[in-house]
Length: 335
Ligand code: ADP
Ligand code: MG
Image 1 (cartoon, helix red, strand yellow):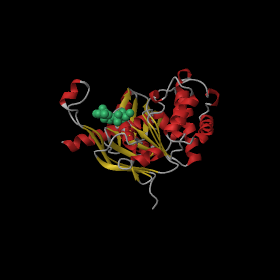
Image 2: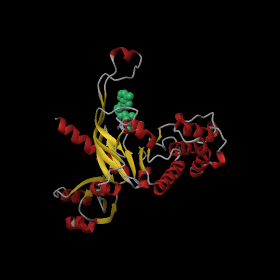
Image 3: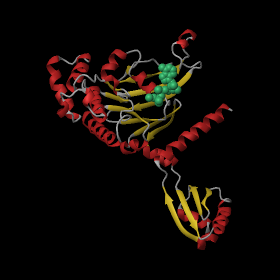
Image 4: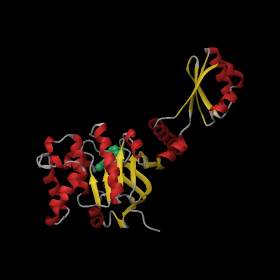
């Protein structure tokens, strides 16, 4: 079987508390160990985008720091094209293009072309190829017109695109983007992600991208790794998350509050649904059964129903529900 481009196995990272003396210097450092990642395993293949989703502190940046060889895991391992990211980071670093979470890695006094030249030389791109490569990647991210403009004079969206060009210029086979859209407006973010999808299709690379903006993931529709407090609570495509988690919501309105209350009493007898009175004359029912089956349950009350409406849960609700369930499960296992 062909190995996955990025393979992550039982990856665990615990940040140990800083030594006592250094706590005077780093006032924020914790006295307790922080379990930033716990037993994470998944793969990403060529031509795939994997979106790492999770609230702040979920462990996204920690995962990326391990993959890029900046820190070592406490246990478990990860490989890129078969090379261990910790033991053989010399090999793996040149295969990775990394876009960090902010634009501090750009030289804002230098022009776009100069920024790319600087990075290209660090990556040992031969001088003869460098100029052509810079033109090629500035064109790819639609920044040709800004070739000689300094970083200070670029908009946030343009800086993000320049960082993307910088991450790609040495032709990596794995691209890692830490919240690339964090600082840009939604239109700029959408354009950046569209561009990313085009690049992935054309260049057979594997992409890991982290985000806490749920609307964005909806537009990507690729594999999703949902992280919460360092644990992987879902891995798979968005559709599978929906299949497992979407419970259709039905709003039923009645001709009077009394009729709604009577229907509520009837539904309380059924184990197939959970109902609540969302307005005096309206019940909101979350149920695995269809509207038809619900009407059957409400047979005796049908003449009082004035409207019935089915809706899908939003992605945000869906993910929050999954995170809450993970939290409850964790509390129960600690009891
Ligand atoms: P995310 O990128 O998803 O916001 P991080 O990987 O930055 O999450 O952080 C995960 C957890 O690890 C958080 O609780 C954070 O406070 C902690 N953490 C991150 N970096 C360090 C560090 N260098 N030392 C100690 N704790 C850290
Ligand atoms: Mg982060």
